[in-house]
Length: 329
Image: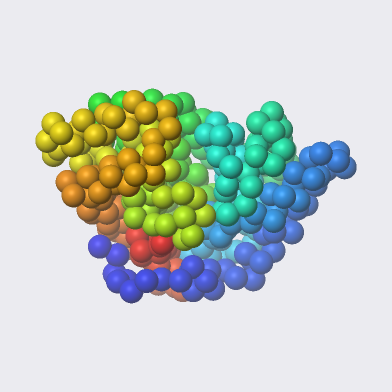
């Protein structure tokens, strides 16, 4: 398990790279600026929806842990956040989501067509920035990452309705959809280090990203809308199969499995049915099994940090593991 057991605040994790991280929003704005009025309007809404910058933090911590932050690392941190934003815009449109981080989504505020095109615009701006970067490594890494994330999006289409969706299927999905970007963020942050350090941080990011997604899927069963900014049980409402449900189904009796099948057959399950299925999944150990899997992945990620020099940045990378496991939103 991660060596830190007390809840870790993200601000503490970001402290070793705070100055550089504070420059990322300006870089984001510079990269996506447009004199086309609709794009400019959507951009302003996106920038107001600014998240926690966890992925840019990984870029900067990896850089700091392997030799120090250079100005171009701030640009790469902004590019990583830009690619993340693009995936969120597309996700919300595909899922017809109306809220993201407690704010209206692009598709809800404008249209689904605008959201799809805007996601493409963000990707294209990221590519232009990487092409002009002068170092082929970030372009190579992020091209692979965006390809894997696209495959992950297609894989997620299979993670609906089917109670035959396996844990192996789920692992492959989250490796592509979530972990690939965190792995890539760590990889390009450490690009000036030797191959061994890059490989360690790349694997660390992959395992961290998988733990992050498992913990996020647990939150859908345990956290309230006031905490996460989205309705509790949203995955179940949308018939999305995630690890808590995958782990619980084999342990269910026929009656409880029939409840799950009833929810999956209902195009608009009621709050009462969703709450009932959440209780059934928890009662059969699905939530606990998923939590344990997140802790296991986090422990594997921690091992990848053992060869790094002892620095505040390495300590912060350790802190990221506890943050992912213990976060509530």
